[in-house]
Length: 163
Image (cartoon, rainbow, N blue to C red; front, side, top):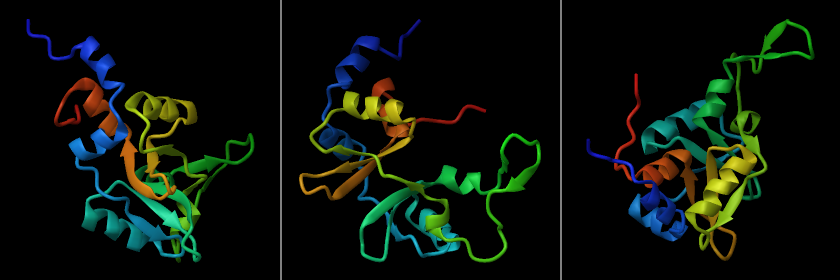
């Protein structure tokens, strides 16, 4: 039997700097969209740039949140109202829905000089799948996802979905 996963190698990878991961996995600069754009614009941007998330900025240019594919999916799921069984849609899908209406507020960031262990701890602590990496000026340089973390820790080049 050939072992593909090596636990000791994974432990060593926890100390890799985020700069290295961003370069190794060719993580692009973050996609940034205006919060006042409609979700059709956002979906087209995701498709055009092959992205699964975008940072959201306000009219002053300040980053105010993040929106992911999961945030888009949540629009279609009814949410519970108090403790009643009655369910209502989260958003009325007719009419204009803005990016700021579905984004997650309160951006969680990590510094470019931190390592993979710091990133993993941040994801687990805040129960999030995407963390924004910032430079010394607190400017976003990348958004790292749980997919990148898993690829690196498991030592695989392509993470495939199992059906």
